[in-house]
Length: 491
RNA sequence: GGCGGUAUCGUCUAGGGGCUAGGACGCCAGAUUCUCAAUCUGGUAACCCGGGUUCGAUUCCCGGUACCGCUACCA
Image (cartoon, rainbow, N blue to C red; front, top):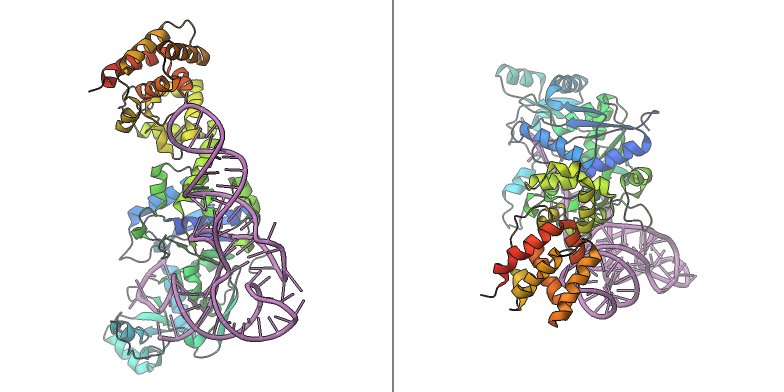
């Protein structure tokens, strides 16, 4: 609508917190749209709130975006470095009469609604004041204004919203919209400290950066008429808006810190695979239109469209996220998985460099052995720990479950001997050795298998025993069996 | 309070004037097994309510309700 060229979109986080999943999804939709359309994705940091701003969080936000695979083509731009533009725009609007200076104290004028809020203590009798009651400063005479200026009163600049008529805009998700102007209050453009508000900053920047599609959270839907008005007053063509539904917590309120892990970083740390996270997040509020669930990034890019964005808020379902993660963990080509395994093992202090070089084949086989039982990356360093180090403990639960039989120390000792005597170390040889022993002792093979598993890995949850033996190697297997004997002995 | 938006299994969703309302997660059961997962099979479960319009509404319209958002010199 606004530009004949390729679309330009932007993601504009403010550094007042970490990147949360809602923001991440918005970024993702922008990115998918840009990639799908062959457009440009701009990153802009909206840091005009000096009070709540925490510049040190910017790096973390960028890092989370990179982890998500959302890479920007331009930026990051910082609004704090573009203040002159906003002041100039505000001046222009003042001159054209589209805006006026307001000398009220910051808390004084709140459109009359503040009265309601202040008495909002369960009291049913509330004064009904028109929300859009204009600030008295709008009607100041030239003399009064001059007087205020002479007195050095701090001033903010407010937009003079038309007292009648309607404002319209198009939304790619919610359709054509119109709002009565009387419902819109005279919002502030420039604060008395000279910094722009969101409304001014966002419009000036979107105009300057030639943004064609504004894709953002639906929490901005109600304020969009203000921006449409600003575009008009600035003589600029409005973009196409696309508001995406919000992501809610399990209690149906907007996802926030209260819901625990809502920052992207916490999911990174927990060991979620970015592509799984991306797949899950994209399906929250967007649908490919058919029954596809498992969509890798190229398919997402290929199929994404604003037309299939939902209008209903969605609840963040961690169980389904884990399911996606499991799918990727199980099905990704092992080569793609290895870097994440390495990162996890490094993090746990278990990594050894030869696994990346001379023993890479062993690592691949072992990862393939472990991963069918994983759901999160950290499974590699927790229950599968015994594959990567001798330093592991016997899980109490496992001991209680499989080390009950008092004959076990004797059996496991014999098993160690039998295995040590094996000329060839392979799956079937281990299998036969164990089953022969079981037959000779007149016990079920399962008894020895389960007990041996605990001795080898310390866990009840583990891959099949003989594959495990192969992965560990003869020396370690025999060693660990013997090492376990004292612990197996009933107390 | 005002204004706006939304409403399909518990959750994410497909669909749409006539369908046994589809899929996925979860849950339950069975199969499998060497533990635990995974896997396979089967099952459970939904069109918010009330009026219209219509031969026929879950679908279209209106009202209600619920929820969400906005109503800041936050973004």
